[in-house]
Image 1 (cartoon, rainbow, N blue to C red):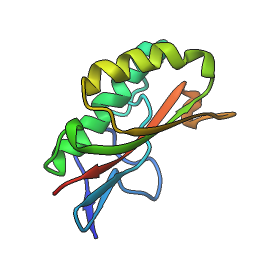
Image 2: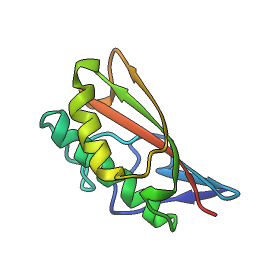
Image 3: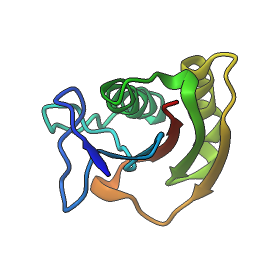
Length: 124
């Protein structure tokens, strides 16, 4: 296992890594709308999703890949009514690449954010 760490995404706020590579697969930890300096992007779902995608991108790039290598994501939303706005930002980020995805509504997320996303990435 190789731990992935970049200063271009927020440091882990608990006993976990930003990402872990096993073989040729990167598993990212769920990313919330924290900026790399640890401050919270407390805007609406659009602003928070942009920050989450930026964090994921930084971790994936640190592992030597890009969003085009993402195989699957899991999106956790505080409110499924935010799905369309989140999906618009997500779609812009991924373009024509469409990884598998699950999206679920959850009761609460860390720091009371609106969205959290994790990814599985093929590094081969």
